[in-house]
Image 1 (cartoon, rainbow, N blue to C red):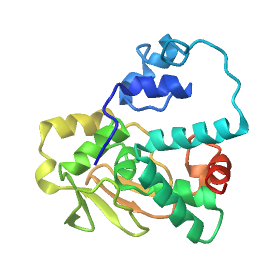
Image 2 (tube, helix red, strand yellow):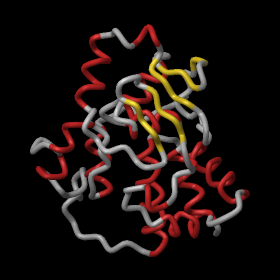
Image 3 (cartoon, rainbow, N blue to C red):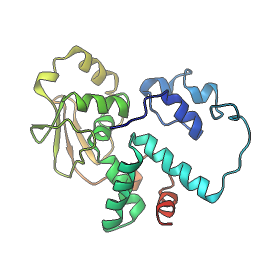
Length: 208
């Protein structure tokens, strides 16, 4: 599958906000937004007023880049969200939050969603005791996510887990640091998602 492989700091500068795509670097003075807060490219420093459509498009792009999904995947999630009971925008964010790679990141088992995606692809985690190496796997309430037994002694992984152990875990996840196991205890609600995304703009964009 095609995937963006260019410099991710360029994406943050394009959107004008931190998307936390490089883990710990985003919290240091090396962060590109802190050093160059304008958009990349020859005309990046020029002032540009966005139309209503432009605002909707940029909001959708920010959400896509936060979670590292392609356009086709994102539209598929929107179509699923539309069919679910409740508010479409909130359903969309809940689906994105439920992706296995995002859950691993939220549990503090990876420094970024990109790193979480790589760890999942390498087969370091199980869901209800079965190995799952699909980052887009949608987790469900009641499922137990664990670090695979053979991966717990890996020094590189242990260093990653330790480095991120102080990150707060959202209340829809129940994490046991001693056993490196976690349970999905609820569907993530909008107040649990600490992202500055106006999901109503995404709904308006796709509803045209």
